[in-house]
Image (cartoon, rainbow, N blue to C red; front, side, top):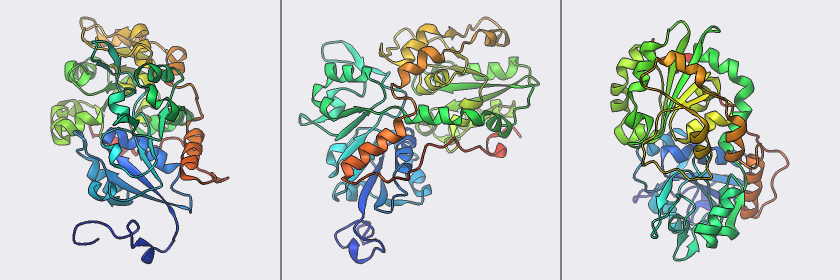
Length: 400
């Protein structure tokens, strides 16, 4: 690293003098937030074992960037400052958010970091439109900021056609990596349950919350304490999955403090470094809100019940979250919770087809598209999406 803090190897005009392997194609992994990091890392894992590629990382500016620097250091990868990243050339850049992508000098791949595009924004004409597939996000000076916009569902092409026709030529329906990873993990359900300390006679109730004032954590936090008070501990265990924007918007210390009494009462609190997908696969019941995690739970066949959304909540009509909101039962505050768990429903047949149009195909499709942009033939041998790693019980059993 030179005096300015810029790296001189493996990136830079003189890097070829210092590297051990030369003439590699460079892939820049762009991480905006802890939420987008998971999707970017999954894409990286599809490419990084290729001997022809060098992967490096950078943190892009974002209001929810807290925690990203520590995460990138933990990857043991080469991390560039954003200032250096926007002044170098790369053969490919991978991102799961839009901010500042127009500053990069690389073919850019941008992916969604949740289950489709459910959040809506109000257009200049007053219409509610899906956030993320609009010209404000996808264009800079009238041109697409990405060379490939990864879509999970055919219906998203219609949204693009309506909201940002300029990006249609760079959009491709590839599928949903997270859904495919969850599906690949289903056969390991018993191992996840055992690792989480769920006895054979017990059921695991997982509470999921997105971020924001209209989320479960923002408007219905008392649900977690009620579950721990009302559910017989010999029959039920309770786990909580909170959106990274909760953890890093308020700070891990504060979130742990707010939930300390719940943890003392037996809550299994999944901290950000733990893989939430293991808990979702192990769940017997899910109580959630309009976030992507709840939609994924329903899509893989977990019985789901929703907290009551605020009247002003706007969800895109064609999203899996909207369909789930139409069909799932509502948690009733005045009734005992233990009786309501039998009212939750398996809605996979309704929700999964809205999560992805290419089930099981996302890894192969994304890999092939990335190699096309790299100008390389995809290798014959490649890494498949594997089941989520089985967590260590002591890392999540915070009540002990």
